[in-house]
Amino acid sequence: MNIKAVTKYQINEYVKSVRIYYLVILLVCLFFGTLTIINSNSTFRTGGGLEGSTIIFLFILGLNSFKESFFMMLQNGTTRKSMFIGRLATIVGTGIVMALIDRFLVNIGGLLYNISDRFYIIGLHEMIFDTRAESLHIVIFNLEAILITMSVYITAMLGGYFITTAYYRMNKMLKIAVSISVPTSIFILLPILDSAVFKGKLSVSIGRFISYILGNRTGNPYILLLTCVVLMAVSVGLTWLLIRKAVEKK
Amino acid sequence: MSIEINNISKNFGSTRALDGVSINFEENRIYGLLGRNGAGKTTLLNIITNRIFSDSGEVLVDGMHATENDKALSRIYMMGERNYYPENMKIKDVFRWTKEFYPDFDMEYANKLADIFELDLKKNVKSLSTGYNSIFKVIIALSVNTPYVLLDEPVLGLDANHRDIFYKLLIEKYSNSPATYVISTHLIEEVSNVIEDVIIIKKGKIIKNETREELMSVGYTVTGMASLVDEYTRGKEIIGTDSIGGLKSAYIIGEVIRNEVPEGLEITKMDLQKLFIQLTSA
Image (cartoon, rainbow over all chains, first blue to last red; front, side, top):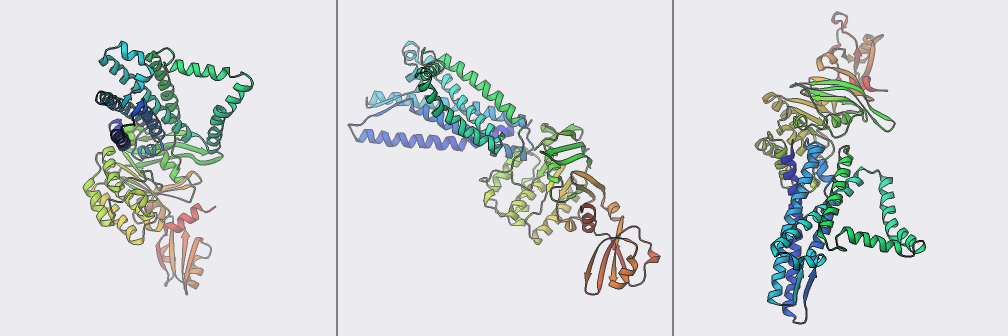
């Protein structure tokens, strides 16, 4: 199999974007950090902002992970199986590395609080599962945070990868139909239905369900981990079904 | 050692692009895959290289099934008419990555060819003209050193000088390190001096699969004064004529009987393009 070359190529595709992302994060932090130091009335506060940004970034990265790479792989005599395995390895690797970097940055941010209480930087894990921070040893808590963040990151990338692959396989009409019907259903039809038929109970139930599967409701991060594992399995399975019969469409 | 294509069929909606195609591309030969627009040439090459799937039939590369088989696919390089490389990638990076996927890719030779064609390696793919888009892919195809190289319209957009360089380089490369080359092209006259075997595809079916010599021997060209040519060709199967001033050339199917040819007429080999037009016209 060509997996070594495929993975090397796909990692190379991500490296540039990840570098730019962290450069932007660094510049933003430097800008607001400097403002905070200069202006004694201002504060630098963020709760899960870094990880939240990373989740969005990785979802977009996933959305950009199919077409160009697929053609390059076809040009270079690579099977769909190899390109898919290579992509999964790249996604998992990127998820791990970025979870480690973000945890490191969050901890650095936490140290700033010791210097000045105008800097208040906490991670997403601390924000959602605040009681865990008090009950666990700091090392265990950080390892748990890395594990959960990593699984969320991988899920975000796989979600983006699945969507872009699905769009590639759809014909023009289906693309238009999905692009209109999905947001319309979620943002227009569902609220109307909820208001007219369920008197607001539907959105409350959906909110509770989402809160539960994210582990927020129970304060148990392993529910979130389980949710991510299920979503990853579904994304991987569906994406493979789409990729195994994908053909050149130029 | 060959690419064996067995009974391949492919439909696009209601269009039958390939209809039970069976051919062998033998080791170390140069094939011309000829056909009119939409005859199924690119579809066939795309199926061989696993870019699309056939509806039925199989492709074997050195005895291995080609469909979703990395080992079989690593033995083939296809230079497509369309660009499959990332548009923002620099040519030098395209070469570098080709080396990753095809370890036998000869970087030194590729750089030498880039110099010959005056290709700027620092340019990215999207900034290249149509001609240079073909040139950088031709360079890869000549440097990749796989046993099978498929060239789909390799001289698309190339000027006469670059086409001449390409044909010379192809023959030189083939002489120094033989491989199987399959050239799909519309420029039949030019390629006819390069190819050893001719495969003609019409409406998804193989209608000719012969050596060039065999194919050319089905007919001949007679040239001379128009009146002499007309008299000589009366009753013979003429597939085309060309006239310049009082001179005329007629392309005739059949065997030439030398002692029946009157003085003043010259007999030469059949023109492949004329034969192609005859065989593929509706």
